[in-house]
Length: 100
Image 1 (cartoon, rainbow, N blue to C red):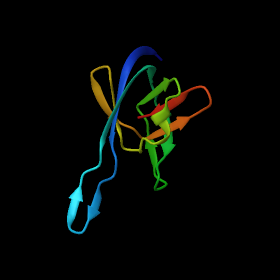
Image 2: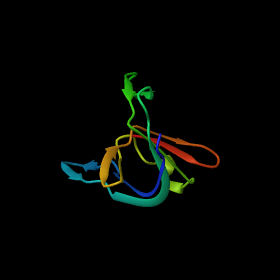
Image 3: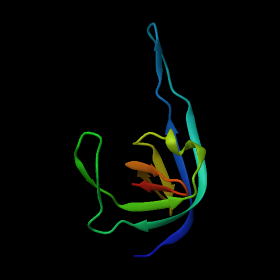
Image 4: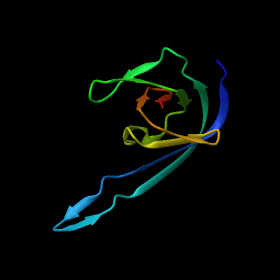
């Protein structure tokens, strides 16, 4: 597998709110980090929130960052001139792994 050191950009939106009959869109967030990315290979899967088995395309490893615990599944991650959907984020003591 080929590992690439690159810059990644993660974006997501907070949930919107409804007050009376007025919907207010959630705030947008953007984080740019240095990371190591590599293709997942043919046998990499995770269990989705509904219990479905989902094949992953890329593994992303980066340093721990504050927002890693609040980014929802379904946020977007961009690197190598492509954009992917975040399937799951695993925050460990010394690093973060993102499956997309």
